Image (cartoon, rainbow, N blue to C red; front, side, top):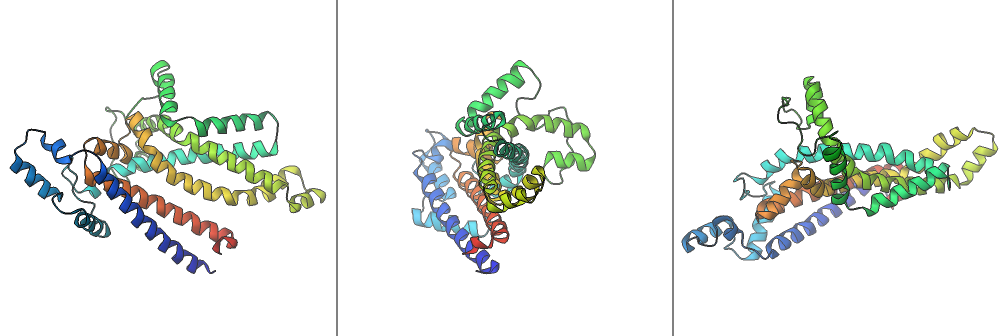
Length: 336
């Protein structure tokens, strides 16, 4: 199958998945056993005011009509008006998403920088101390809940030692750099504001480590498994028989082939980091999209809940699509 045909097929499947996600998000939001109008106006509001609010929110229409309105808005890039902020949901998403994206990028960098070398060393030194350490590290990373790890690190590095800030994205007394990308670290460097960069970096370390720990463990496990599989291949034995040095065999011949399946894991991990940011942002008071969705749930803000969740699904699907295309370009067998 040609690469262009493969991409078109994946795009079509992505649209089907997004439609299914839209249906699920709409049904789940409407199935919440609470009345958003009552949450806004209170239980003693006049019936006329309640009816007016239901009409304004479109809740007086049949469910199928509400779903049609929701999907037509999504197609136009309109997720509705947030009940909490009284602004278009898409504007709220544009405001809060850069913080989540920055956190996910830093967490992904930590995962790759730590996970790939750990997996390589574990495979090369199989059944030795580094291998046992990597396996224990991976098991703990996969099994420990994010909120538990976050609370432990908060107690240790913020409350006990006082080395790192405990919440927020930047200190209240730090001069903010001009907003260019919405990513504080990058904007600080572009403005030459190294004080803001240092402060933003200290604030992002704890949440990024917590968010990236489980991903680091997953990447290390996959890297180890892939490396061990490649090291057993005939071409590796042939290279060793020709007298090629051990490091050259590992880092030029084995590593290049072992990285192919890891590329997929890294891409999917980044998409997963965007989803996993909900708990992390709540624990560390990080002003991102995940915290925005949680606050919307507490306030029964239907448009914000559905818009934020669907936006995350769209980003995850796009990341998955890019990963599939890259993998298909690297390995033509995936196009079948």
